[in-house]
Length: 310
Image (cartoon, rainbow, N blue to C red; front, side, top):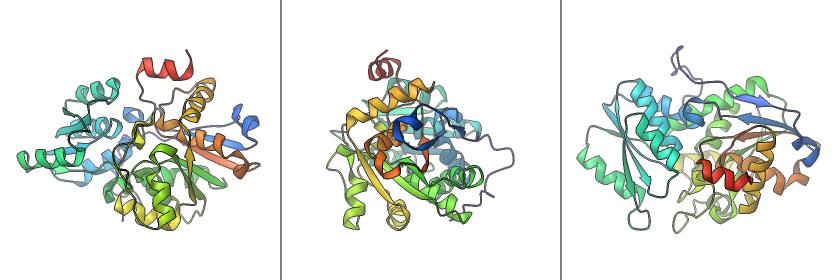
């Protein structure tokens, strides 16, 4: 797997992650916290790193993917920038802001009721009618992992001495990518996953030594963690390199969002999982330097205001 980023053009539009420190969270948790923000990334989440790599690595007139929103809009944006077409399968419960964002980039949105048809099945149906289009997983892909490795490489350069990095985990593409990027620079920093307790397939998979699936898409606030299971490629990396997964009660997600709001950061529920994990298990990390990845900030106004109490 290529993690040296030579596959990225010198003119690539990826925005380096912004790192914030010296917030009230240090005193609250007893840690020295570095907030690693992807909120200002192109399309508002880390997903653009992966999508940009997919579009630049695959010679195809168009792309098909399933997404709760962030990968969908990232792929739609990257495809548009390269003059390609894009169709995104999304649950009909997806955040309005994410559906509208995908469409704003010229992509076709195919909304489905996931209780009636799975995302994977609908993608397969569409691929038969669009045989020239490349089907991309949002997380279980070498191109995706390699794209996300760009963040790991950044962190190896700017935060080589942190004791641990906590990463939101859904399908595992971000955590696997960060680990790959760090290890490619010989950085052995511990990486922890942060996962909703009601969507704990990653935690169960690591405990059992094999991929464990959810029976259905979990009804968690963190829509990026509503995956059925970890990706196969990601599990191969995470089962060897991930230090563990911290399982989070739903109430801590909104609490983390409130604390991040106090820091001036508007973070979506999935993006707040890393800070929620620290609130859930602060004793594990007390007196340590901890990087918390804030993976995205795309959230409907009414949902955000309700969760942070505005």
